[in-house]
Image 1 (spheres, protein in one colour):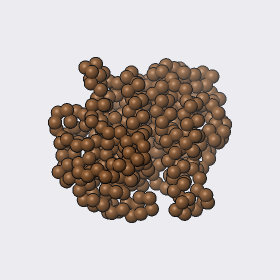
Image 2 (cartoon, helix red, strand yellow):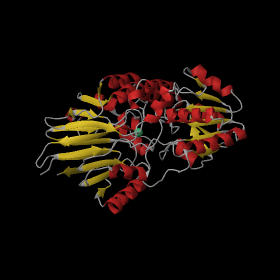
Image 3 (cartoon, helix red, strand yellow):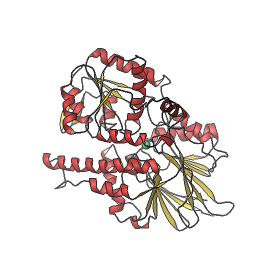
Image 4 (spheres, helix red, strand yellow):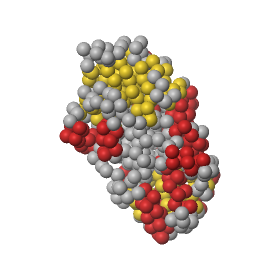
Length: 465
Ligand SMILES: [Zn+2]
């Protein structure tokens, strides 16, 4: 007996655009509503209508606030979606910062294209505006952890911790049906076990079907402790004498970096240097972290109880206004600039890269996964030039990566999470990975766990029985 239909509308064969439509019990729930990012052929999908009418979707359930999981919401609303939007409380708070920012970036890009004539469409339009982003965020309803909420006549959903960023969840959906119904779990993005600040991923528990991410499906994180990698990278960068640019996601990575920098500075393991946080969103997000102590793990709570605020212990200068940001250009010598976006696809980090990449004394420290087609990936791959604001900028800077800071579990971490299932699922769908990563991970599930695993293609529709 079919209990549900599952459509893969994004993050199938790629890492962005997460969108899974689950139709069951006469209702349609969209799990995640993410924007495609990276390669142009993917970004163009953001302009296409979904294969099902927006009005036919009853509700959206978001695993977490990252734009590749939430950033299509304003488009969905513009297309006529008027159902409820559910997320954890912390995710809801973060969306209040992230979605308007995403709209603002879209508007800036459209303005830039119009001013420079770099557009096929006249005028170039934003995918959505800052106001539409804010309006979408205002519609999100916060739901407590582990509390089952109704997502249909009989279906229920609950959020369990995924340990990825503040508020990040796996979504567990119980569908009614014969022999006890079925339980479908959407992993969301799985965090690293043992990472600082946040709780570890909660056990998977019971599941008949699992839709699991595979960002690092064919990789193992560098086992060298993050503090040691950072200590080396910063030490070498200071010796080069130039600026250190760290493109960082405003949410998650930035707070992890501040935490580690604080530890290194207090222990005298890195030379004294000025640190700038040049991202209004990162500054706001750090404030939201501080408002959600329920998200913190034991270690973080213990530090807080001893009167230490690990996210505020670094002597960090905040650049909120564009003037404050520009003033950093004049700073010579060892200066560490943390600025968004994390893959250098937009944001203020572009100005710093344009100014400092041609200088061989500069160091760029990449601290997260760099999607194919992004400037971050080009730098990681050793590009001699990158295109910024329509100019070819020479890369003479030293580019280095610190791996374990990723907010994603590596392949072994994802296997560890799957092993926390209380019984083997009927099937695992491997999503949110580039094809090679997803395929490698699917093969490992079959070989090491003996569970059937499929890598769905974009647009695939499967019937769950
Ligand atoms: Zn994420």
